[in-house]
Image 1 (tube, rainbow, N blue to C red):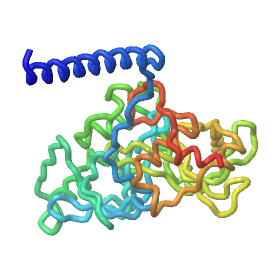
Image 2 (spheres, rainbow, N blue to C red):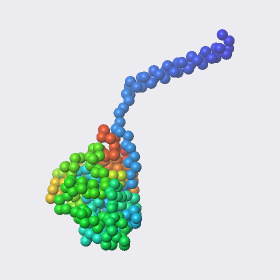
Image 3 (cartoon, rainbow, N blue to C red):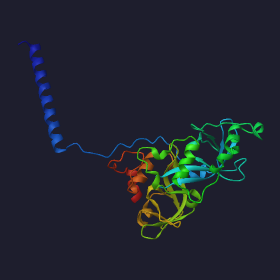
Image 4 (cartoon, one colour):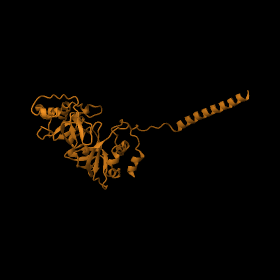
Length: 311
């Protein structure tokens, strides 16, 4: 064996020993520290949420720039945690009545306006008084005599009425989506009933007052309640998952949490927190809720940031 062959032999031996050693180490490491399981990877919501108080007051315009009305309130589906309808006031030609339309009938929500989305609705425009002076869509929606049943809000808002509204405006009912609750179980009420309402704790004490709602625009999901006047805090606002709210009738709203948990929750800063998906997930986990934008699996540990809520 010449000198070069000896060198190659030594190098090859070293390589084999290193390979076998690393393999044994790997096996030993794996047996001592088996692969752990963690919660799901939280997907980015891709959202740009806004508060209900910001949406209320927006003007709705048609695709041909006609003024259809102004958003004065929202109809909430408590069962599915969704904005079911937006309610328009200052609507032409309907005698001061409000006009409820599906949440999906508004798009391109901007600083002060949003567009009316006709969906699969067929808007037939027949000649009549005022037609030549008005936007054709506004005319069609407010002059058709048989459509007057869609004006105003009934004293009892039920699923049958909501279904008719969606069918009339050519919007697919969101409650037919996978995972949504059956229509017969819906609780529907206006935001006027929620905004400013006092909420109780599950033990009967006062939790605070509903200051606002945070809406995920992708489907009208109500992500959070924003509370003010929270017991044990100063002027802080606190965001809690909408799902911990229940309605016990007679305008009595209850949060499934404790005074201590609310007192230790991190304050809500709308200027910094609204667009932070990590913050949103941490709030849900802090209150023991599965974020609705994730798969229904075991929840991942809260981040160090959420653990700071307890400090």
